[in-house]
Amino acid sequence: MTVELLSNSLYLLIMINPISKVFILSVIGKEAESPAEMRKISVHASMVAFFILITAAVGGNFLLSKVFHVEIYSLQVAGGMVLFYNGFKALTKGVFFEMDANNRLSDLSIVPLASPMIAGPATITLVITLASHWGTFHTVIAILVAVGCNMLIMLTTDIISGFLLRFNIMGALIRITGLLVATIAVQMIMQGLAYWHSTL
Image 1 (tube, rainbow, N blue to C red):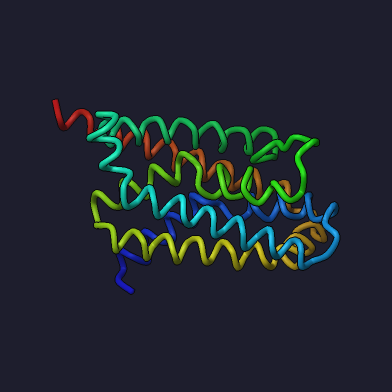
Image 2 (cartoon, rainbow, N blue to C red):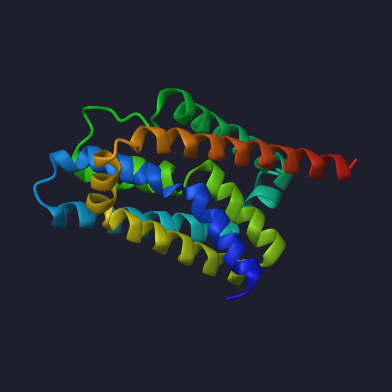
């Protein structure tokens, strides 16, 4: 694995933000009938998100430029704004996503886990950007590595959340991660603006 591929995989994994999935799964796990049901939710969410991100990587740039006539820098700015909102909410409220109490447990693997929590506006923006700069094959491998690592973390939610709750650091970690996500969002917006300025 090249340095660039490893770096892009890690960057995508940070954007996916596994700690937010651990938090959500630790909450909804109280409603699950068995650990097997939680594993099924984690795997299903990962597969759906993988399909969404692969589709975005393969056809996203064509769809944006040829169908909607949207430049990649516009998507970077818009995706960065959405990501900043999520990071700021985690930083100030200590939550990444607020679920509807009426949601059925079986539906949560698609919404919110698969999308928007794994394959959301920011990660879709990132894979389209990566595909335009590094090529489709490079981006697909990065998606496979990042989503795979995130799924492994989701499958070990019981162990991770138990450790974090035992030492009472779940809330602090969410806020620290929120700050990191907000910082990445600002960087994404600045890159989009710089790219736009270079086209003038």
